[in-house]
Length: 147
Image (tube, rainbow, N blue to C red):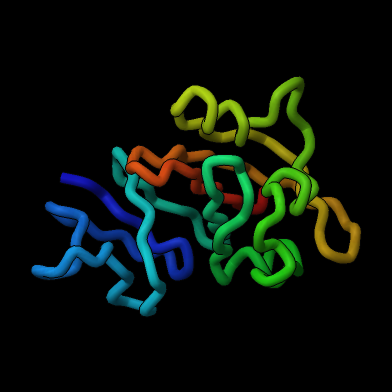
C-alpha cells in the first residue's frame, strides 16, 4: 500500500489507488488542503522543523512547504522554477549533487550533511533526505532538517 506525505503540513497517509474517492483526481491533503501528496515507497517520519521541497524531473522547484520559509527565509514564489540546489545554495557535497544522484539513479539519498544558504546570506547546517518520485511524473521530494 502506497505511503503519502503532504509537502506542506507533513501529514502522513496511505491510499490504495492513488485517487480521490471514485474520481480520477490525485489524492490531496485532507489535513491542510494542499493540492497534492508525494508518494513514498516506505513511511517517513520527518523531524520537527523539517521543510519539504517538491521538484520536477530536472530538479526545479514546484512547491515548498511552510517550514522551508522558517528554515531559509525564502518564500515559495521566490523558489518556483529554480534548481533546488542553486536556489537554496545547498553545498557540502563532493562531485554530483545528491539531488541529481537521486533523480538519475532513482534511489533515496538519506542523511546528507549539507549547508544551506538563507535568503539573507547566512549559512545553516542541514541534514537533507532526497526521495525520487516513482510515478509517471517523476520528480523529487527534498526534506531539509536543521542540525
